[in-house]
Amino acid sequence: MNLFQHLSLLALLVLAAGFLSLTEISLAGARKIKLKLLAEAGDERALKVMQLQAQSAEFFAASQIGLNTVAILGGILGEGALRPYFTAWLSFFYSGPGIDTIAFALSFLFVTILFILFSDLMPKRLAMIAPERIAVAMIGPVQIFIRLCRPFSWALNLVANLLFRLFGVETTREDRITFDEISAIVEAGAQAGVLQKQEQHFIENVFELESRGVSSAMTMRDNVVFFNLDETEDGIRKKIANYPLSKFPVCDGVIDRVIGYVDTRDILVRLLNKQSVFQLNESSIRTALIVPDALTLSELLDRFRATKETFAVVINEYALVVGVITLSDIMLTVMGNWGGALDEDKQVMQRDDGSWLVDGSTPASDMKRMLDLKALPEEENYETAAGFMMYMLRKVPKPTDSVEYEGMRFEVVDVDHYRIDQLLVKRVPSDPSQL
Image (cartoon, helix red, strand yellow):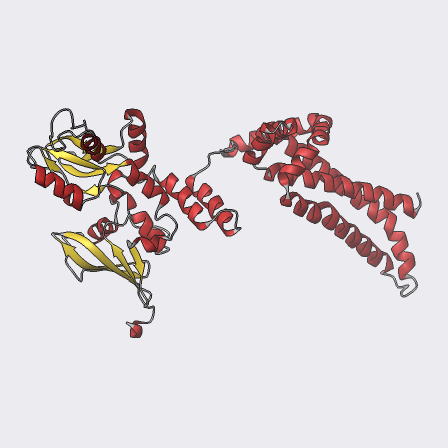
């Protein structure tokens, strides 16, 4: 064969190796979510790609057979075909005893660079740009190639599986998607401008409903406004005027004896119908949903959906009321402060000197996000910033008590009846002289 024929055959081998590299990376990198979307749009090739991913051992065996065979043939062909031409070219400059060795090295280097550039580097970079689109486009030729290599790939996989069993290696791919992976995707979308920052918070907060307890969003016991069963007309009027709430628990003397609750809309209807507004009886008191404080916000949302209620009284293991919570409280947990950042909610405020004032009732997850902390110690043991301090201090808090964590000092600023109202958080300088 002449030089043109040798180069043409070498080019075909390079293209064959490039095709195998392109398909190998695209099939490995194609994401199932995008493939499912393509399949739902009517592209049957996407289903074939997903089936091949589920049984990928046969394809990878065939791919390696093809790549190694082509690489060996390319090396043999390239070295044998190009060395005489490199020898003739070198003879114009050098005619010593090592001319054949130099020609061999140059032909080997030329063929190696050719395969690396056009059969490995460029195809793989192209495959990483759009793996799903390339995998779908190439699935037909890939299936034909797999059939051709099936006897050899079956034998290779048999040996490989025996070795995996011998060394106890698990070969089953785990496709479970975790919250951290979804959060990373959402964050990447926000950084790319696909999602707004507020939308990123919404999505993350929705997933946090599964881990956050009801106590992180409820109105605490000390702040619950309730009607006594024998509440006077004047007392009911003042509470409705002073506390713009839509629902008030009704209790028999003390908050732990909950009878039910009153919806102020019922009172408005009575007022419009010119009926007695302030009679607390069976007709005006609704049955309250009682839930344990061990529930997560996601579980409470299911309870609200099942009972068609939007108000619940939260009790602890001793049947004592620890707070009340509404559907609106859960929605506010998801939305945060609508239209603004979390620090505008006055729960976490950054001061001019770089320190933060944190309300004790701030959910621990919100405080962690605002302070840019990756994690808090033993987060399952508390729900709020105050709970974090109580857990870290291991004692009843008092003003000026402080703890240090991850280069930050958390100091108790205000305490009301053993309850932490506010924290001061500031970074600890690495240089002690700056303290």
